[in-house]
Amino acid sequence: MLQVAEKTGATNNVIVRGKARRRRVKIVRVFITLTTVGIAILLGRAMWDAYMIAPWTRDSVVRAYVVTMAPEVSGRIVEMPLRDNQFVRKGDMLMVIDPTDYRIAIDLAEASVLQAKATAENAQTEAERRRKLSDLAETIEDRQSHEAIALATHAQHRQAIAQLDRAKVNLERTEIRSPVNGWVTNLLAQKGDYANVGQNVISVIDADSYWVDAYFEETQLASIRDGDLAKIKLMGSSKIVTGEVVGIARGINVANAQPNQQGLAEVNPIFTWVRLAQRVPVRIELTNVPNGVRLVAGLTATVQVEPRSQPSRW
Image (cartoon, rainbow, N blue to C red; front, side, top):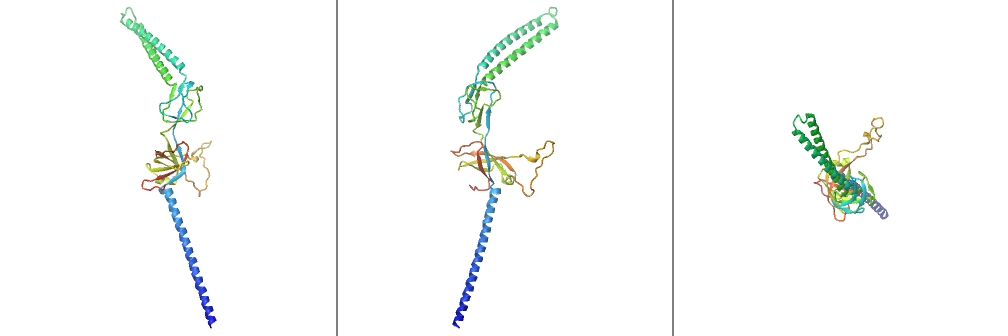
């Protein structure tokens, strides 16, 4: 009887331990499930905040205006007191074109002015003299003819003055100065080269014109407004550049809108269940650039736009 009781007690203990083990396994499974669901909710919330509340994009580029210096007069370059990538200030001399021919043109124009002035004065004097003559000594036709000559010579005098002014302007244009503060870039010309009218010789990047074009998906635009704070991380720097949204583009290129050779709409086939969001440029004006950050047009950046009611995540 004692042995039977011991076996029964051992069996009961095994059953109890089995139930306890199954209970612990069930609790662990429930805990894992709840933890997974919680993590998924947190990740979903974080993604919602990232894309809708505080949208960000890694598809951004630094932009700047480039001033192309093309001479307005032709000639050989006799001075170029600069080097590639040099910083220049507004009004600094960039290059000088040989002014010899243009100085001679001024001398010739001044001589033409003096000659035209003398001719005009003589014609005016003659017209006034004939105007005082009696009708018997001078016919009306002769008077009108001399008055016309006086007017024509006066016009020639004014034309000569205009040509002199143009010659002076051309001489001034032999000295090319920087219209902005900025950096000379991609300088290929040198002293002794021949510069043609309208041909770009020097390019200057305007130091005061840097901005960032951030390309956001169309689904993110609803939470972006003009005046929103923007934080920018350049790929090659850990410092934060701050800016302000100043505009959202109102048009982008649509491939299907381009007609083919027959003038018909060219529609590209797509999968109806897969639609890629278009990216729209958002222009950001830089408001604070930390010391040590070098802005270069064309650099890539990551941009986060923070609506005024939302805190920063960086």
